[in-house]
Amino acid sequence: MSQSSPILVLGGTGTVGSRVAARLRDAGGDVRVVSRHTEQRFDWEDPGTWAAALDGVPIMFVLLPDRTGMPEAFLPEALRAGVRRVVLHSDRGLEVMGMDQLQRTEAWVRDSGAEWTIVRPDWFHQDFETFFRQSVVDGRLCLPVGEARQAFIDADDIAAVEVAALTGDDLAGELVEITGPRALSFGEAVAEISRATGRRIEFDGTPGAYRQAMRADGLPDEVVDALTGSFVRLGERGDTVPTGVVEKILGRPGRDFSAYATDAAARGVWDPA
Ligand SMILES: NC(=O)c1ccc[n+]([C@@H]2O[C@H](COP(=O)([O-])OP(=O)(O)OC[C@H]3O[C@@H](n4cnc5c(N)ncnc54)[C@H](OP(=O)(O)O)[C@@H]3O)[C@@H](O)[C@H]2O)c1
Image (cartoon, rainbow, N blue to C red; front, side):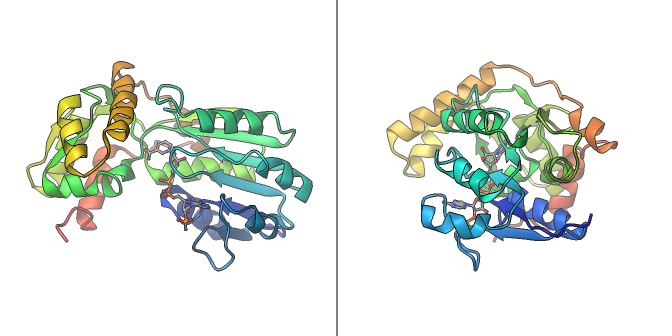
């Protein structure tokens, strides 16, 4: 890839965005990664930081922090600054989990007049080394999704699809729902991690166990209720069927959860600190 103008990567220091930025750089792209903690500061909550980030940018990747949406003024400013392609990292669970702000953001991107691609991934493999890491290390994960199968996807595969959307034309105007190659329940995923680490790890998919664990962590009741409700709805949706879209776009199979678990265990991800 030869690129003289920078591709702006918002959210580019996190799990997925850092992989998007690395892939773009490996392909020879000029990449501008900005966040609250980069030298050039960008903060969604501080509009004064937006103009410098957008300066001279034709293409941008947008990944918003969990459960937030884009400020309404941002996209018009980006278009005025010369952005003509937007790849939005969204979320496959946004409807069932009630992520209204992200739904609004999707609509703004679709209606913006820019070339757009919206990528909706399923649960990340890497959630087991971020949100769920401590529970895995402690030997007990509670999440009120029951035994419904989720099509966990590797963050590297998400990034590969998003880079394809940023750098090629085939995905323009598309909403792509991406999953891993196999759906498995949280209980089955945790069993894979048990196998890979050689340690006993339990999974409890009931609302009661989750509520108890969250209250023990000090979360207020209204937050616990909201989280419980959205996970229960996700569980009630039933088993997810893998979409096969990663395979179609990348021309290779997505990474399976057991390969992820083996590799992550070897990296010491779940070693007690
Ligand atoms: N986890 C899942 O299973 C899953 C599944 C599907 C979709 N998603 C979606 O994926 C997204 C999360 O992706 P991720 O896990 O890769 O994110 P992440 O690792 O939490 O990274 C978040 C990024 O956003 C930046 N950021 C946070 N607050 C910011 C602010 N106020 N202004 C500017 N930048 C800010 C962070 O950098 P700084 O902290 O330096 O600012 C970081 O670069 C969410 O939109 C979620 O809905 C998640």
